[in-house]
Length: 267
Image 1 (cartoon, rainbow, N blue to C red):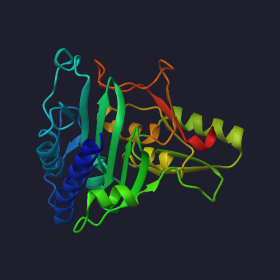
Image 2 (cartoon, rainbow, N blue to C red):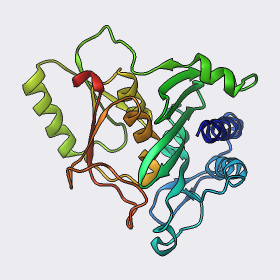
Image 3 (cartoon, helix red, strand yellow):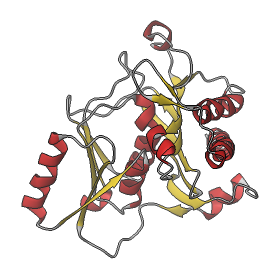
């Protein structure tokens, strides 16, 4: 399992290098996909780098920017990688830095390994079921994965500000989310509401800087798989609003139900 985590971390960091080169060039070559979401040459470059690492391992890959794979093919996969080469392409285009590289290893529909890299800040979140969840800061010009594994800070961290904090989507705030925020105000009094792009919302709950992340708008499996692993491995609670059961992956339909993630600080 450790070698798989090492490979995922290396893939994410090297993809981050390719993304930043394009990010700083300003030449994004923006296209529109069939679902009206944007695609840049950075998404494509990141996908190619990640695949160059993951395809060396005999585990299939489901990537947002890869070819569509039917459920008939996927249904017998006990293990798979789920990849979002750039989560937060809209934030990438806006140049606000709030985009991530997401890689998750799924086994029997459960996320075991999660890696999220934030290229602009160098923040790296990594987790496995065995070791828990950690955060490190990476110098892309000089890094060693083994050293990162040893020197990462275990999550969640202690937080001085005890104000109940909700993190919500910067681009997909919904009426249901606004209702949830009001319900939390009724319960907790003062509530701090933070808007963030991409999987940074899940990372904030995992590290304890936010108490919860309600998501009452559509997401796909590749949007959240790595973040869910990171949250689960830091002992967060995840509630599937449809079934009330555990959140699962490699479903027939890759769109996710609405969900709420709660920090383990609330337990």
